[in-house]
Length: 220
Image (cartoon, rainbow, N blue to C red; front, side, top):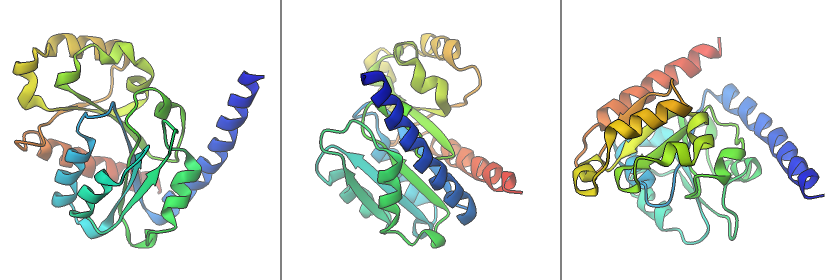
């Protein structure tokens, strides 16, 4: 039956994710899974992020159905970028992450950013072993996404609102966005950013540093 097949797939994925998580912890590697719709600005935010961090201590696994375009962009900012093409797959899974690590000197890294396939549904169901899911939404997508795609925003440890420089032009309703987000997640911080202007990027970087400190402290 279809339900049983889906359950078996998720169970097998979770087993690999647990192995990934154990490995990340042993390495002191902080891993974030960035999830959003296509075009929300994941790659642009990562470009800014890699320029601000020690890029040699960072790595990015980039998920797309086809092409290496995002990996090529990020490769200009970081030497440790691996493209994962999923073909018809609408998400990355834990086994793909484990395979992607084989091309990286993971013992020399502090950060692993996973740029998941552009999709607000499928990636949320698959644990990759990451420390946190970060949900991105741009102002041009509309303010109602948290209630239309609640699973993503419920699971998000942090929400990044991107393309804030376009908020006025797109008619983005901030009050409604925050009200509807808090209906599904009352705790996750929201960081407003514009990768074009640099607005809010410092706040994002500050959150990253605080989060990494929390992860490292939890290792005991």
